[in-house]
Each structure stands twice: as structure tokens, then as C-alpha cells.
Amino acid sequence: MGLWSAIKGVVRQVVRVVVEVVNRLTVGIFDQLFGFAGWPRKKLRLQVIILADASGPVVPTSDLQAPLDFITRVFDERFDVKVVPFGHTFVQAMKDPAPDGALDYECSGAAWYDEFGTVGDFFAKHLAGWNAIPVGVRFPVTVYVTRNVEGTQGCSLGPLTDYVVIDLEGVATPSLMAHEVLHACGIWHSRTRTNLAYHPSDRGEGAKWFQKNMLRASRHVQFW
Ligand SMILES: [Zn+2]
Image (cartoon, rainbow, N blue to C red; front, side, top):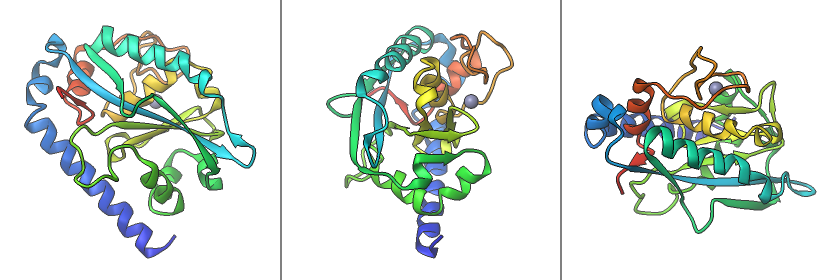
């Protein structure tokens, strides 16, 4: 990895942590304490980007409908959060092939390492909402759809990044996208099978009161 890529990667994560903490202590404080009451309604902006390999986008746009229907309904019902597209539409398909490390993405410790190299640069470059100057204050979540996430269906570095990665199997599991977005909003795994934060793919769609607080106080969830 290049030194410059590594420096940029560190700066990106430090900025995220600062924004996250400040957000939870200021505009998010009410929800951090009382978010389970689910009032008033907030918004989460979402951008789905389908990566391409040499033969084009790795999945047709229409395959994202079930995961989008799921997250839209469940976030509304469980968190009183309206999921809206960041751009004109939820889904964008890329034309140019993505780097190999993004197409066959390694989760676990490797994801952290990748963040400081070519793959991190690639994801940072295409991220919704951060490349415009001045940077907006809506902090959308970008969902990258890739060919394969090694050993699992999806990956998130939690609040350290503004994106999650899901693969083709993940697209075929409608609850997976919503599950990864929970991680991006600072929620970790639950052992309760009926919970949306349950790791295995036969998870339910439930949410506990403290998970509502966490999600609604995240930087990704705002009143505007
Ligand atoms: Zn998970």
C-alpha cells in the first residue's frame, strides 16, 4: 500500500469517529437517550452502487428491489426511520471494472487493512455525499454490491466507514442489506434469532429499545 493511501485512510476514519461522537452528543442526544420512543420521524439516505467486472455490472438493478423493499419497510416499522434515496434513484450501476480486491472482497481484519490501500481509495472515491465541497450533513450510507465477500455475504466496518459491502448471495437474502446498515449505524450482533442484528441469515426483523436508540442517534439518521 502507498503511504499516501494509508494517510488518507487514517484521516477518513478519524473524521468519521469525530463526526459520530459529536453527532451522538449534540443533534443525536435525544435519540441516544429516548430513541426507543420512535418520535419524531427521521431519515436515512441510501445509495446502492453495483460494481462491474469485465463483463459489466455484477447483478441486474432489478435484483435489488427485494432488499430495498425490506429495509424501507422494516426501518419504517421498527425505527420510525424513512429510508430515502440519496440521489434520484436508489441504485446506480458502474460501467468500469472495479479493482480485484473490491470484486472479491475480504471481510474480517483484511477489510480494515484494505481501507488503507487501493480498495479503500476506490470505495472512498465513489462514496455518496463526501466528494462534494462543501460536504453535506446528511451522511448517506453507500451500499456497494460486489461479486463475492470472502466467507460471508456482507461486511461493514461499523461507524468507521460510510459504506457497507454485500455480495450476490447477500442480494438474494433480503434482510442482509438492512443488517449491514445496522452495523454502519453502530449496532453489533444480537444472539436473538428474531432480531435483525442476528448474524446467521435466518434472522428476523426485530429491534430492541437500545438498538433503536443507537440507530436513531447515528450520524446517518437525521431530521433533514
Ligand atoms: Zn453482521
